[in-house]
Image (tube, rainbow, N blue to C red; front, side, top):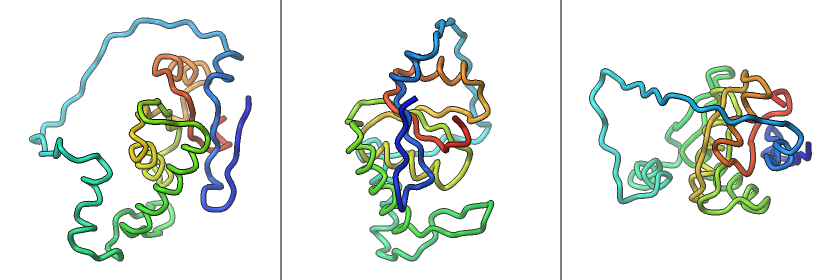
Length: 162
């Protein structure tokens, strides 16, 4: 597989070309039944006139307080402010854009529940690309099937999941 590990701020990311991965693995497409799970709680209102990233950071820009906590890493206790999350996700977006991801492309996020997952998801949203998420504990065959079915052009993951 061809991979690219980005230095400095994004050293935890491994970008994998799905085209190369799918060429190396033979994958059969199997039909599946769609199953939808719904919360027992009422739906929340989400604006349909704003991009997701604008909607998320709306409070930050209204309050004007970049020191408000947005995200806490449960494993380490590290807190990320709205400014931290916005700046980091924009930097990651710029990086994956340089690697060829454009509006409408699909990017697989193969990460555990972590700040890196959130930053990756927002980075993809900043570009107007589509995120598809996969469990890092899937088998290589399951990951390949998911990548093929979603037409993912890139996988964002950590080296330990490949």
